[in-house]
Image: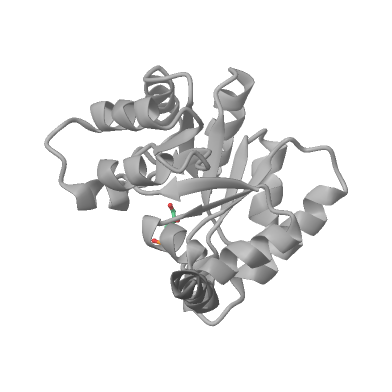
Length: 214
Ligand code: G3P
């Protein structure tokens, strides 16, 4: 399973990247805006690409097809690892097809149903992003959606990778991995949670204490 960091915070991205096990980064307009960075969006994204040598999703703000295309092409020109993030709308799916045909990798975001995931794959998206946490938030099962998408995609030879997004805790990642999802993207906080187990801490403390007894 690939690990992406869902963040636009350069310090967080650098800290996670230092472990050598981060495969990519996803950003979205909310995450970028939260950083209140003085530099332009393009410069910020370029800096992220320089830190993590893997796919970096940068989202378009346009909602109309032709504007999505020009914005997507511009974003794709920032770095060879840019993945253009497009929303799951009619215009978004059309733009996904056009940009994918041009060889630009697209991540279709805001996916909440298997039918939307099927459309993204048909349009040639490199990634489809089901938002698991936001489904859980409305008393629906985010992980059931991931399972459904895995089942549907398993019947065909789509190259679209299932990128589990809106991850809120380690079990989202574990469950996604058990289902065989290709990628999980998660905040730095969740990355640090993956390491933790109280028995590891207790066990290490005991080993060191016992060694000191000798
Ligand atoms: O990057 C998209 C997604 O991961 C957002 O997550 O926590 O705002 O639902 P969240």
